[in-house]
Amino acid sequence: MDIEQLHKTVNQLVESYHDRHRARGELTSFRSSNEPPQEPGEFPGLQALLDFHEEQRTYEDTLQSLQDELARIEKAYDQAEEALASVLPPNRMLHHDYDGEREEFAGTHITITFRTLQGGRHPTIIEFSGPAS
Figure 1 (spheres, rainbow, N blue to C red):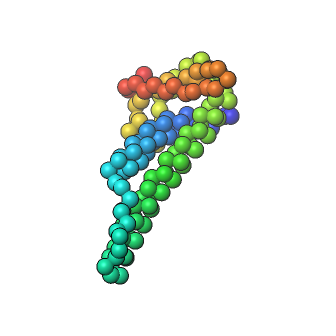
Figure 2 (cartoon, rainbow, N blue to C red; figure 1 turned 90 degrees about the vertical axis):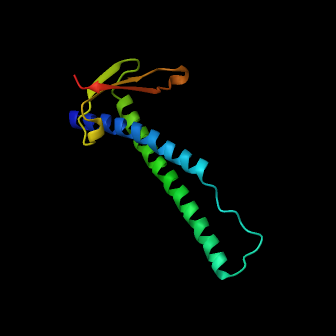
Figure 3 (cartoon, helix red, strand yellow; figure 1 turned 30 degrees about the horizontal axis):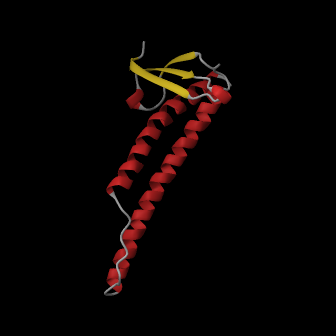
């Protein structure tokens, strides 16, 4: 892995870490504030059937979209985590000043550590602090 790829990997890890939290929150919020439309016992006419179908489709499409977005973000996170874990030894800190394209992270100092657990798993600990030093 060269320095450019390492920059890209770390930035992807940081971005997807935040995006994953946001996407999980959006999915949870949607599920808690929206329920699938309840099927009525009968439909008084064609318009009622079409209205129900549209509500059902809108609900399912929105839910699927949120789930797909979360899956895409989690895949990006997992790929970046795996790539970085292949070069960063466990229980060692990596200090990095964010230098990606996302303005909300500009000037942020990041510390990344992979902790070794039983079974060889390496959960990632990412800490963010104020302006880069």
